[in-house]
Image 1 (cartoon, rainbow, N blue to C red):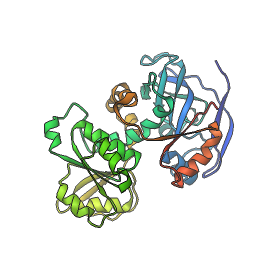
Image 2 (tube, helix red, strand yellow):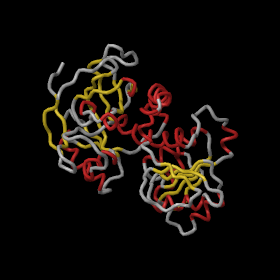
Image 3 (cartoon, rainbow, N blue to C red):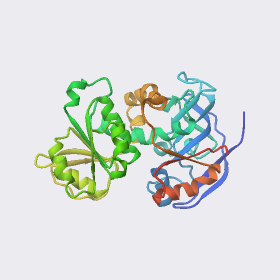
Image 4 (cartoon, one colour):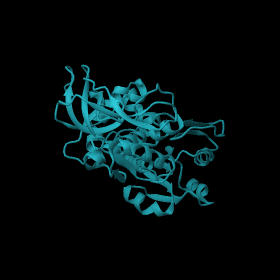
Length: 335
């Protein structure tokens, strides 16, 4: 077994990444050690590096979604074994321990936060979990939408879900999840994405920039569940108006100081961490839903595989923050 490890370190707030040696950890009893063969640059990761978006200790290793091959398992691990190809969401942003950081060649993670991927493409496997868990966590945990198979589809079909800004990867996954549960989905997006979003399951897609979009949505409503996957203030305020006069709640992927009616509740959480914060949801996610999704039950968001290994992370993060790509950037730390 290899005894050396290399990581992309951030040593100061908003500092550039530095490639350097890192400890090679052995897993504790409930942990596994993964040879990291694919990690994804998420907008959250990019903002933490460039904007110091959350408080972390320095020096630190960022990143929490990885895919690769298990090289060691703890004594109490039973759900996976050495040699399994897996994807995992490490608890690095919750525990703030560098051994869980995804931007290194060998990563320790919790076995309970890991799913087998079989023969699935490892780059796609790494790109799916963060955005998909954001969509499903928001809808299921925080808006109380059911699981696929739990809701009577004939009843659900008569009720509607609004996904604003569905052109994002989170929005696309939200459409698929809501449709899979059985609901009729209405979405807003840029016209260039209309056909694709209809293919994913949206019954109707409206231009979010149209001056008549709110009037059109009022005619199509009411909506049982509402979510803005773009999260911008304009979308939050539009949903706030659509909830009038009775009020209600909606989920947003962004927070911020946004003026909303008093009878409107905006839910803004780290939805992707619901798998770690809600054990029953996490067990269902890693043992059932995520393996099926990666196996083909969900159409994945487009990816961009970049060469250069850990050294490519700096430019990848800058491109994500600068909105220079809409695809999920995946790199192989072993390169």
